[in-house]
Amino acid sequence: TEIYTLSLHDALPIFSDLLTDNYEEYDKETIQKFLKIINNASLQGNQLLENLLQWSRSQTGRLQVNYAKVSCSEAASSSFKFLKNNAESKSISLELDIPENLFVWGDLNLIETVIRNLVSNAIKFSLSDQKVSLQIVEKNDFVEFSVIDKGVGMAKEMVDKLFLSGLGQTSPGTNNEKGTGLGLILCKELVEKMGGTIQVQSKLGFGSRFTFTIPVYKGQE
Image (cartoon, rainbow, N blue to C red):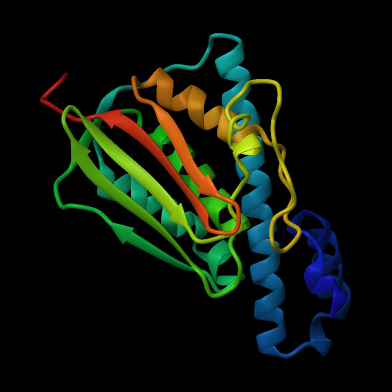
């Protein structure tokens, strides 16, 4: 039973070795559980590499913003699909609240990267059977994306340092998930590259709300 308390990063080689060496000894349900854990770990590793790549491009001036008309629904749904197994492994429900036919002027890949990082972070610091939601609303010339959780929250001292480059605040998740502290700093970089802003409201023991903005689509080409 202790193996299930390991971080995904640590559990990946253990579960893959177990399947490789003892495949015929496990029933279908156990194999499916192992495969989900391996899949989650692979996605987590992929996200880490993507973050490092984007961060490297940003710091060396090679990050390009490919502006286009972006569907908020498409960006959100794709990001949630990517994190579905991650949420299910902690019995966390993902909820979307998106108006129909709402579009922003930005880069689909960068917006999805920001959403994935924020939602993944919310899952990381939520307890089992809680909810993580994404609310999207139009306000003036921008669209607000808010990722909301009822997890462990943060003290003001940590909130004040979250987006400061070089400080990379990180701590283990509720299932001992690990991180680099780079994700939130990268989110700030990407959002500001697209002309938006990002902010956080959080209270220790009561969860967090991360909100970022992207310019609304007004027929730009």
